[in-house]
Picture 1: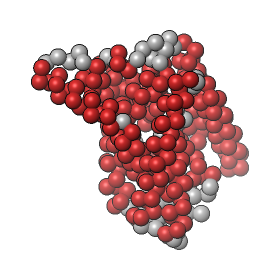
Picture 2: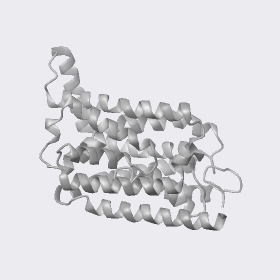
Picture 3: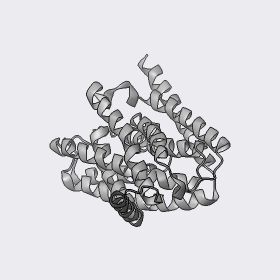
Picture 4: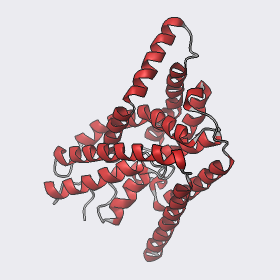
Length: 290
């Protein structure tokens, strides 16, 4: 079957169905610490659709950003108000102001990493970084790091205690998410747990920190994606974005409740199985090719 972004021989209904599946996958995996980029590559391959590519993946992410903006609208309003008051009064000790600065500082590393990818790996869609073996090994490595953070983290700090340096620490971890399999939410959650955060507060900070990064990535790729032929036209793509928004909202609400009473060991186990499965799958096709 043809890749999802190819217009040939794919009708509107077929394209719509494919984008609905991508929207569900995006919504479930963007905020859970299991890597949306990896799943958006692997699931279409399993279904015989081909790799949808970075541009389509980034556009589908717009649904997730709509969901996170809507879900955290009050938090964002508080952060904006806190930063406005701090800029007027010159006092940046208010928690909302510190959180805003942390988010801004934490966005810089992934912007630099993204620009570096664009500059030095022009054919990123087909690069080694997006190969199944790399995604498999990266998923396993991140699972082990999350397990270590779960074991060693003190889980005492609250979001109200955020410091500006937290933005840099967690932002550096977020920048690793340019590698498929790392997981933006997974890397930031892992870094926050290592830094002593409570699980639910770490997840909340991860979601807020990801808003600028996901938004910018989606908007930058939107023009490029729409300039290319889209299977079935723009309507199926829009359906995928809406699907991603609805499922993302549900995933955010579920994860925040889940982490208030449960550990991250379920995600550690899933990532290990996912990574091992990809290595076995890649090895099987490698053997056939040989």
